[in-house]
Image (cartoon, rainbow over all chains, first blue to last red; front, top):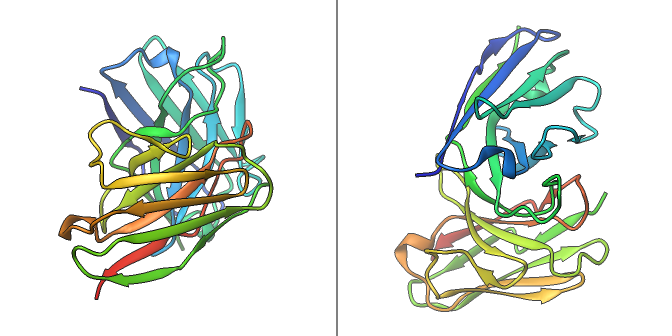
Amino acid sequence: EVQLLESGGGLVQPGGSLRLSCAASGFSFSRYAMSWVRQAPGKGLEWVSASSGSGGSAYYADSVKGRFSISRDNSNNMLYLQMNGLRAEDTAVYYCAKERYCSTVDCLPDDAFDVWGQGTVVTVSS
Amino acid sequence: DIQMTQFPSTLSASVGDRVTITCRASQSISRWLAWYQQKPGKVPKLLIYKASSLQGGVPSRFSGSGSGTEFTLTISSLQPDDFATYYCQQYSTYTPYTFGQGTTLEIK
């Protein structure tokens, strides 16, 4: 069974840091682009960051560029999101999500998300 | 960035109704559009990809259509399990991906 399990969320003060993790199982992890998507309380979905299958290419939303960093460890089927300089507006449930299909040599991000984790809650507050 | 606009924001309907949700892109995205269903406290679920392809396991009462900038999600006969929030998402470019603001389907 394909599964994604996030961890690492919590309460952090403004300006602080957190590292989110996503453990993947049940599929060939390195063969899929992966993303982080967040949802603020009572709000819609917002894409945050994506990683190519190899981890060689990373992409960010303007709202987090320069503060967040995505990475992956394909040998251990793990996806990470390092979040620095956290702000109140970063408060959200953070989901990791698997893309449906790999259509390029490096599995660049270019497809819908067919598997989502359960999410981890990040609260930025003093 | 490509902006996605969904309408209506809220839709009230009854079991058995046929409903349509529309999603409009600020520029052409060909057919690179997905639809998701999310219930309160739950994870988003992929319903439709590439504008009209039904994800495995999704009931056939769900269908998608459109290309370019205008897309629709249709539920042919609403079931009690369908009352949820629906999001469209474009994946035309190598990010940033963008979602519509969501359409909440309520029981009339």
